[in-house]
Every structure is written in C-alpha cells, then in structure tokens.
Image (cartoon, rainbow, N blue to C red; front, side):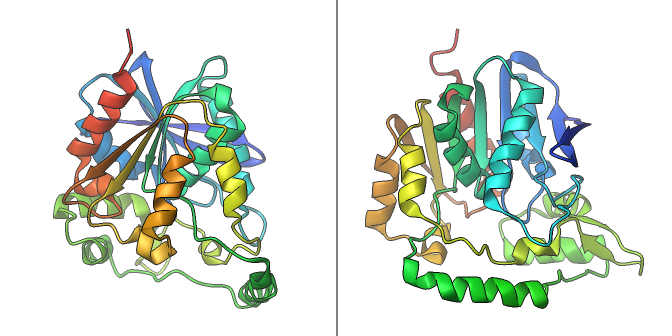
Length: 292
C-alpha cells in the first residue's frame, strides 16, 4: 500500500486536511471525494497507478480530518471556494489535472467551467449533476430545510470497526473485506462510549434549501476548455436515483466541448473501490495522452 502524508492548510477559517501521496511534480493530480466519503477512499486507486504520480486529495469541510463547518448546514458554493484555495496551495501558477467522484465530480465540473484556465484535464467519475427542478418546488424545499434544522439528523454509530466494515460490504457486495476494513478505519473514529462514530458531520444530511438549477450547471460546463474524461459504471444506480433520463444524460455529455466517454464494467457507483485498476488505467491513459 502506497504511503501518504497528511498536510494541513488554513482554508477560509477551517483547518483543512489534504492527503498527499508524493511523486513527480510533472505527474500531478488532485482527487475530490464524494458525499459521505473521505480522501483515503482513493487509496486503492492510487495503489493501482503505474506512473509515479504526485497525488493530492482533500477531505471536504465536515469530512474526514478536516474541520466541521461552524454553521448549522452546508452550502454547495463553499466547495468551489475551498477547492480554489486548496489549489492555490498545491499548484497556483499552472493548470492542474483534476479528478472528481460523485459530489467531487459535480464540484470539479462546475469549477472547471468557472475557472477554465486553472484546469489542464478533468476526469468526472459518476458526478453528472442532479435532477432538474422547477420554481414551484421552492416553498416545499425551504419548508423541509427549516424542519430539518429544527430536528437535526444523526448518523448511526457502530459497535466496532468490524461492524462498520460489515455495513460497507452490505452497501457494496463487490467490496473486498481487506478494503472494507481499511475504509472503516478512515471513515470511522473511536467514540467515547467505546463504539465507532463516522468522521462526517451529520449536518451534511440536511437538504440544500436552494434548488438545483440545471441551466446554471450547464452554462458552467459549456465554458470548460480542458479535455474531459466522463466515466460511469455499468452497474451503477446513480442515474435512476437522481432521476436523470437517458436523453437527459446524453444532453449533459453534449454540453462539454471535448469529451471522452467510458463505462467501467463490473462496477457500481463506487467504481474506484470496485475496479481501481481499470479506473486507474483510464485516468492515466487520458492524462498522459499528448504528454511529453
């Protein structure tokens, strides 16, 4: 297992944790994890990389070893601002390769359109936006948000790290036991009662009061100038859960100027856990295409 080091940056008033697997400076990428995940989730992918890549992976605010937000809920634009300042620390003077999974893919795609000059190449792993919304949904969404602020969600504790690993394998039957046990040690932390608590702020489960505006997201995607690798998983249920139709899915891909589309077989939404070697080959082939 390739060793990593922990870096800590002061980002917008929070102590941000960034996991770093040191390598060649000319083979650098930044990995962005998904919702209710942590940076260590990319360990299997990093282990599968053939070249000596210099890899950075932040824990988003409220996840892993990064501070929790000091407010009572989380706002999506904060991820963009956090990402910009993380990139300022890692590579401020040149475009960088960006890889995002799920939530991280959504954040990365927006950022690549908002700051196109800062991204050399972008890889989107199962991060294809959310379902379209209508203005008429706003009153109910605001009401739900207010209700959840008053009756805040909690995250289930686990009796042990082994029990958490059991749950991870139940959620993803493809996940090997050794990988589940590794993830459990990074997703969880010892609790005061002797059990295990997740390293995630429960406030992440509070609904976003602002409706997702597909037209706004598309306007950002259309401004991406970097080549894009769009990767989905053959056995993923993400599109159905989000409510994206095949026609809508094709429209979202078409919003990108330069796009390579790939599907990973025998993998679900957590494709970097299920098939890290295949995902690593796709990423490396894409990032090294045209490199000198």
